Amino acid sequence: MSLLDGKRALIVGVASKRSIAWGIAQAMRREGAELAFTYQNERMKPRVEKLAGQCDCDIVVPCDVQDDEQIEAVFEHLDNYWDHFDILIHSVAFAHKEELEGDFLDNMTREGFLMAHDISSYSFAALAKAGRQMMHGRNGAILTLTYMGSIRAMPNYNVMGLAKASLEANVRYLAYTLGPEGIRVNGISAGPIRTLAAAGIGNFRKMLDHVEENAPLRKNVSIEEVGNVGAFLCSDMAAGVTGEITYVDAGFNIVGMTGY
Ligand code: NAD
Ligand code: 0WE
Image (cartoon, rainbow, N blue to C red; front, side, top):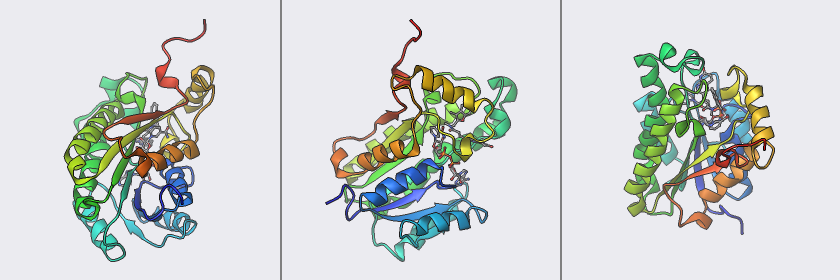
């Protein structure tokens, strides 16, 4: 008997084998879950199909989360294979690259703010809204990925910090709303990991080195470590946990000062 035997999981946010969503998918597959994947656009399609194949999965559907019709279509498509599902993983974020560097106010625009909040926070509630009927009354679990820039001011994270603060409030409001239907909603706040979303972020190496030197565990976390906590939070082992943000960051967030 494995942690997720008999569970069906929809995974939104795989772009490559380095994606955090891929770490979660692998842990869930290993624990016995049946998987389905979405991809953002035609460029991602073959990559996601190849990775899905490695988890014996042939449900792979398009979903650009900025498009209401595509969000609806995901669940219409899924309904052809599954009459219900148990787990929804949201591992999606976007802000304009120019807004993830330098002075927060100099580089902020109304359009960039709305874009970051739309893709990184609104999409979470929108997917929950569209998937709600198919998850009703089944010990369902919804999980998203966030970052400490939501609760602390950090260099360069800028508008994404605001979007993540909104996302974390979204976790609590969805937990409150969906709890009576048996659906739990949680977030994982991961430490920095070199994924496509980290590519092109200036000085990412420096940030990884800083964590390695200062986190209690003196290391960076891996997508496998995040994946295992994701599998746990979405399993019945976590049946009493909802509305929480769990840090998977080698303990970095709890440190007040180092060097003494
Ligand atoms: P990634 O690039 O592998 O994943 C980001 C995903 O967002 C991609 O699959 C991309 O296709 C998707 N996406 C962006 N815009 C989209 C849209 N309009 N429609 C549908 N999908 C869209 O990078 P990742 O690091 O695995 O990021 C996954 C999540 O983890 C993000 O929410 C990110 O903020 C969060 N996170 C990342 C780190 C890190 O250091 N890498 C740390 C903490 C939290
Ligand atoms: O949430 C993130 C990154 C999300 C992200 C990444 C990109 C890069 C490419 C959102 N939008 C884009 N847009 C792009 O064009 N992380 C937690 C990783 C991350 O990003 C940072 C970080 C960390 C950590 C940006 C600045 C400072 C720290």
